Length: 231
Image (tube, rainbow, N blue to C red):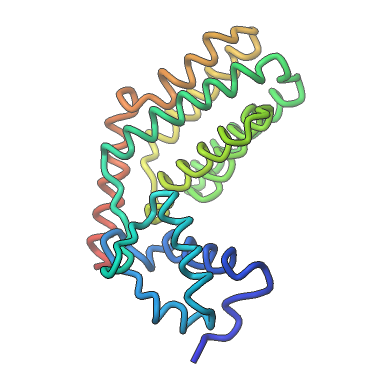
């Protein structure tokens, strides 16, 4: 019998997608685990069609792999994946900042500073979820100036893949503090009108796998350890 109250009145495909993303983010569906379509459709009280459509979207985003006659498996996130995603995000955010640089105004720069201060407070309170949200908002200020919706879609999708591994409750504090310092450097370059340097900084420092490698390995090692404890 289907669990009542799980789904509402969006399109069924959207609801199923959001439900599965929630399960991934909470660690209810771990990398390497299988998704039973019959059990899931029965639990949600939907046919296999919206479930299949939602799984196809998750496959396009890299969260799962669908194997004919073998079922659906939640993908692992490898260091090579992370390296690839950092390279792509860095290039695209750099391009977005370059394109929208001249439209960044004083109010937006002030907002970036305020968000960075909120990130500092979140770290002091060990509130990673708040830090994560404010970090996204910081980047969205200059990304929001981009008129390239395809670019934004790719960046948002890859960030979901990086951060919902599942989402960790803990974090690497030294990394978060370093990231806040990088934000300060970026804002300074923007205030000084250094378009090329600011755009390069996003790509070659903030989203550089080589620069961030030690932090990344530590962060994702924690994720793997957390996963191992749950299995």
